[in-house]
Image (cartoon, rainbow, N blue to C red; front, side, top):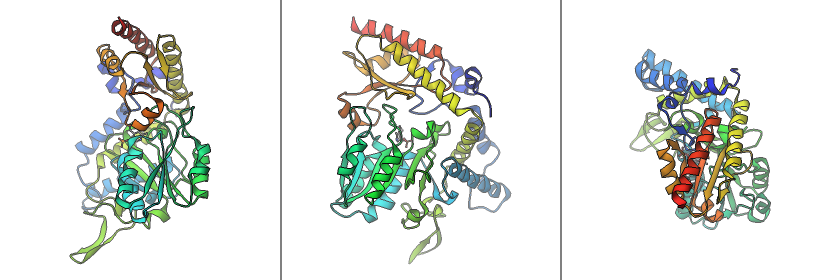
Length: 401
Ligand code: PMP
């Protein structure tokens, strides 16, 4: 394992040589050279497809494509690589569960419990499937600590609840609900759980067996891998009962005009030519992560967020929405619109996100039209925090006068 040294760590990210300060890693992480090289190699040296042609390059690529599946399984302690389905990302994975698991099962009046803190990726697929089936989406509200109020689960779960949809970590507050408690309660009411791991996996990949998770989704691009690739874990007994969601090449064993026979999971859920470079890039990201002292890197990025919050708290009108211990800092400045601030920060070369963060119900619960969000990663530095603070002081001066 390479010991964590912030300045050496930074050197692995070519994007940082362009100048500017990147504080938007919760939207998508910068890519280390190892991932860029693996993706490039896939297009320069390894042109072939997988699970189709018999020539050597195709066979070799197929083996590496399947090894990558095993790496994902190991990351989240899935019992088998066959429980891992390649998807375009978290959104695609949750839609797969909504359409392939939930849609055939839901009856009018059934309930899907969704936390108010969810990203739209873990809300809209449930609203869509509810409309298709006559089921209801029920809200699990957030409490004063901005976390889903798990104490309300016993009264919200009932014999009509089929599924609980919950995020491992909020992309707004960085808050992490107690998954073990939520899953135990959901299971005791006979409901399945869909965990959105898009943010959480970056900080602490869930152990799907220990937590007894039914479905877990994540995206490669937040985990230092390429965009357009992600994975869904599903318990094998659930995947085995689910019909394919999309049809096409290689998801079947026989086809005629009379019908088709689907392959076994995971292949029955992977119709068409997959994102091979994405899979190999994600594998490179996982191998690279494996070599980093991730707990030291995590402590470092959280400390940067602590430092930024402490400095910014001295600015007039500053209000933080951060759950403590997170490397995400969502905040606003009273009387100044977040989009004006972010536009002026961009002039200072500082990239951070503003708006509703694809979490409009969460914004409504917080009583804001949107927030700013600085998200810190191990490639950020104390100088980035200083630059953010002084640029914000300038910006507030300019806008408030
Ligand atoms: N859930 C959360 C908590 C997220 O932060 C995101 C990405 N912003 C998603 C889901 C959706 O991920 P993707 O767009 O990669 O599918």
